[in-house]
Figure 1 (spheres, rainbow, N blue to C red):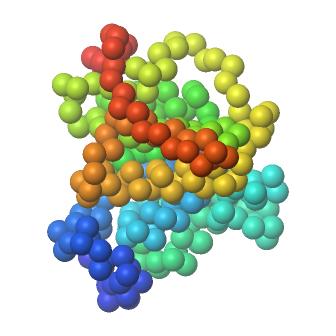
Figure 2: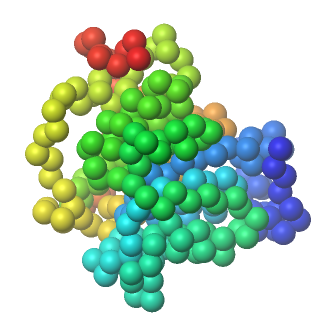
Length: 250
């Protein structure tokens, strides 16, 4: 069991005053392990606020290096990091928040050959902006009963949902909502653009959903959160599967 040091209790002193952070919940936090696939516009603020909220165990997955076009939204990187590996820079920056957090890296994009390295995660987060990877992670999480958070931002619009895969009798997954068997021509950041503020907002919402779920603070299971950040609106939609899903018996 991971415990918090005196230094960590000082770092999180204002947070742990909240009644939501009982001694029992603080112990839960110290043992949660979050796998974040894609350390970009959503993944950066997500990781920052997870570590700032007392999460001690992270697995960062990304094979990319920092590019100048990343800097408007990928908040862990600066001009001095151009050309460096994202996961290495991210780990260094996150350790500056809490030097005692445990951060593992996978310095390559996830695929069927290495996805088993995520097997010990409590929740796997898809922050990749890659539909093929999203489908792969969704299927892997169902097979291994790992909770899965899907996140996406395009332009000013975001959508986030956390799937509870611990109860197979109530199946709902990404394939239920988007059942296309073939890849579709989805809009991407490099073609339609993305607001850095919207990516940051998505990261914050995803972080809160993870904390809520891990500590049972509110029911965020199978609720699709959507927002047009330019209009400052946010909606939570309860999603239910109304058709036979190909992955229901996986």
